Length: 381
Image 1: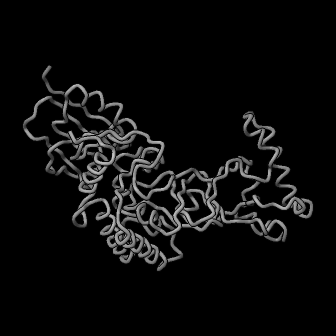
Image 2 (image 1 turned 90 degrees about the vertical axis):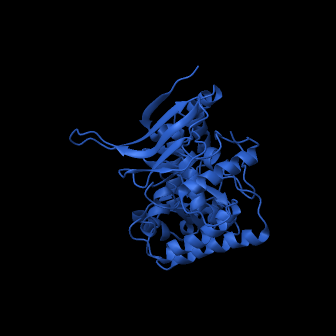
Image 3 (image 1 turned 135 degrees about the horizontal axis):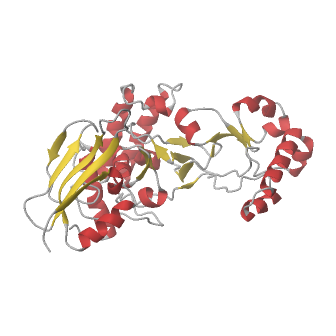
């Protein structure tokens, strides 16, 4: 069968889980992408109509001519053609691999990324800013107060705390009205739940319902990133900072994984294979992190990557009053921060096999898919 066809769609078909489901069967029966327009903004002339992010993909079964790939520096800008020899389902000039969920990490030196701690407490183990003074005034309860970070606290640097009672002395409950009242409220909340698993947690009202807090430094990763920020808004914390379930976390005692996650190579992978919630980038441990194709590297290069991550932290520390959202505001970054990220990118790009500092996100994505094909044994098509 010969012929040609094309479609215009929202760009969601070229991101995340839909890619294998749609493009796998098409590629399997011999079609190739003849031309493609990467993400651009489309809007109708109707009053108040919202812009939609779209992609155009055209197919044929020919070997020639070479495929044509068009990219947009800005969603509402004009297209620019980029050289391509083969276009995959992510609209990248690279191997026609299809990235699916993976239960274990693929990349060398990566540890698992897991959900943060889920309270299931009706809010009674959480200490809000307007409650802090009352709780901290109780000397018994104050021993158990820890900083608590959900995605909002992580990105916007808003204060929040929790009662972390994994080492609770039972006698302290009798000595503290704050603890007694709050734990009684947790138990009542859990017993009233329709979920049997939550009801069972009423036996231990002092504990978060699901716990996975590390005892070493870790990287805190929000479930969603703003598409407008040039880097992932991740942070390093010590084990005393309790990570909530609106984030993922991965143990990182030496800062290596913070550096990888803070690089342009990582955000290029996230943009290529991760899903989205509306327009925000959606991090997934099984799809994005477990498939990140980081090759094995030597100790010297690893040290350079860690040093690059440390430079990013030092640049952030120049403005400790600024949240990550403010630090990475696209039009207002302190010059020291992109300079530090450039130093980091030089090392991380090299770690992924680039011969020099990459000049674009598309160049990084091409390298990433080549590394993915190598590590998974999927031969480029």
